[in-house]
Length: 105
Length: 179
Image 1 (cartoon, rainbow over the protein chains, first blue to last red):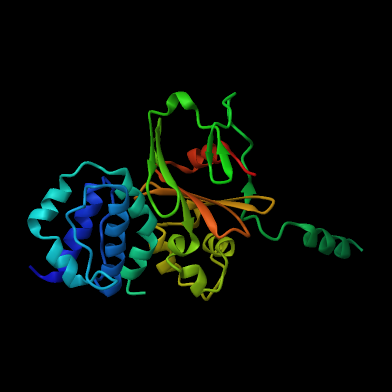
Image 2 (cartoon, rainbow over the protein chains, first blue to last red):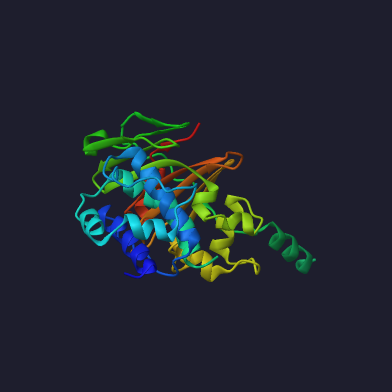
């Protein structure tokens, strides 16, 4: 699967899993990957639901790291997770930075 | 003389009508039982079905009541605007006022409106009392409707997210007591 599509699918699965009516659109770039990595890390602070996701090597999540750690089967599992207050909060927290990054700004 | 009087009267008119009056308290006898950071709330207790304290770097919690789940968190200006306010060398208050008035040619309003899920300036409500400002962002296509409450000199902003319209945002604001 194309890595960029993997990242889009992972982000959208995360939104869907949290019960948030939001769709990722725009470009997948290093900044988008970095922000999604921060979102996962922050979600892991307030729920055990994503405990299976390892920390990215180095300080920042990359497109390759997301593509590797959010495979199709795991994405499907995440989509079936119950809505998580914690994940909703994180999505709300990073909504603006993520949108800006997806616009390439 | 008449012309001079007209000029004086015109000069005395409000130069900006961006800010509405802060809503009067609406507690219906409910005490200010919920405290968060420096503010207190009188959300009707009997309507609260769930309270979830979240573990996060900055304090946050969710309250589930009649209008669904509301997320309360302390937030940074950087996360609220994605850094756009700094890019335009504006403080947070001036940034949202500019989004409402669309009167600053240096701002790319297309981008800013996309970032904040805005369709029109009517989606933005601005309320002012003393050194406090509240900004509501509401419409029926947003992922979250939002309310920001902050003191002009504070680094942290009280950020509320959920599903509510502009009227409900004012009702919620009326349930806050500021320090």
